[in-house]
Structures are given as C-alpha cells and as structure tokens.
Length: 167
Image (cartoon, rainbow, N blue to C red):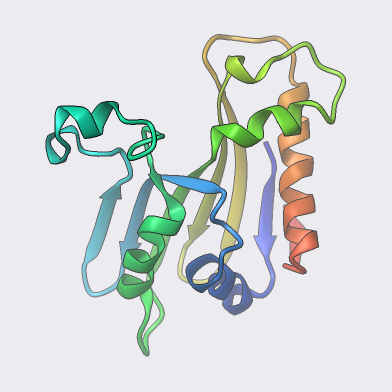
C-alpha cells in the first residue's frame, strides 16, 4: 500500500471525469460533498434487473458498476463554479487485468486469489491523494501482489503524465 499526492489536481480530475483513462476500473463506492453529500453504492442493484439479465454476463459482467458508466453522473455532481468540499472514490481494477499485473513479478499468487486491486481517490478540500490496496479472498503471506499493484499504479500515472509525490 502506498499513498500518492497528486500535484496537479485540475489535470487529474479532467482525466478522471472526462477522459477514458480510468475506464479499466469499477466503482465500489463514491462520496461527493458539494451543496449536499451524495453517496453512490457501486454494487449493481438486483431488483433493477430481470432474472435473465442478472445472470447474463454480457449485460452484468461484474458485481460493481463500470467507471465509464457512472463517470458522467459523478461529473454532473462535481462540475460547476465551486470546488467540492470533499470527495472519495473507491475503484477496483477490472478483474480481467489482474493476471497481467501478477505476471510481472515473481509470485505464486494467482489471479483467482486476488479479490481486487483497489485505488482509493480522496480529496479533502485541499489535497488529492491516491491510496493503493489489495484485497484477497483469503489471508496470504506473499506481499508481492501489493508491490506489483503499487508499481502498476505509478506506471499508470507516469504513462498518462499525471504528476504525483509519494507520501
């Protein structure tokens, strides 16, 4: 787990809310504080779907909503003349990308053992911080996946020329 402070918040927010840079993520939850505090549960709502749709992996491939689907909603809540007082997004890397990250290191951990590679994005009114995390289906002694995810996030930011400082 690492914490990174984004040095150009405006650029990062543009990439997050209007670009496709983060479309390889799912939204677990969001909290956006403007004139109200809006909370979004990224879990898909079972009651919304028919039984057939719920079971159809093409319609509903993941437990959480794709960031690219919910991004416009979050953008509408944030846009305006005034900066939000705070927000937090908990994103999960789409599971299909997990194996590629694990392949870059010397680990016996397999993709099916990793529940999620997580990216927490938090703005407190002054600073924007990214915190990485890894969730497993069971306890594992091997911390290599954590280090691989940390490296992948830094590479992701550098490739997109998003400046950051390690905290």
